[in-house]
Length: 76
Image 1 (cartoon, rainbow, N blue to C red):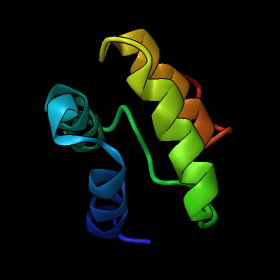
Image 2 (image 1 turned 60 degrees about the vertical axis):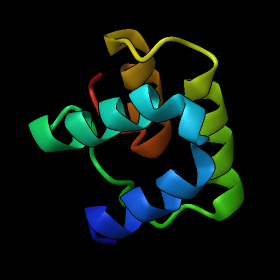
Image 3 (image 1 turned 45 degrees about the vertical axis):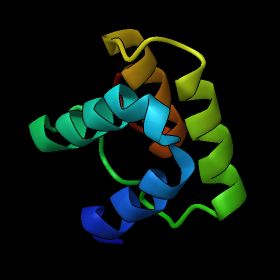
Image 4 (image 1 turned 180 degrees about the vertical axis):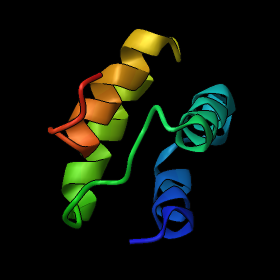
């Protein structure tokens, strides 16, 4: 799945009030901290991962937690 498609799905799940979270996700894909999942995630799986990410400030630790949910093989 192209990152742009994944980001569009994520954008629908992150409320506008959480723009700093969305910006951090975009930045993390850009610098390679986050990688798209190796197999497609269902909307429910993605929603749960994003909900967990939104509980914390967008930090390297929360990005790492999101990265592990998106791609369990990531060394984050």
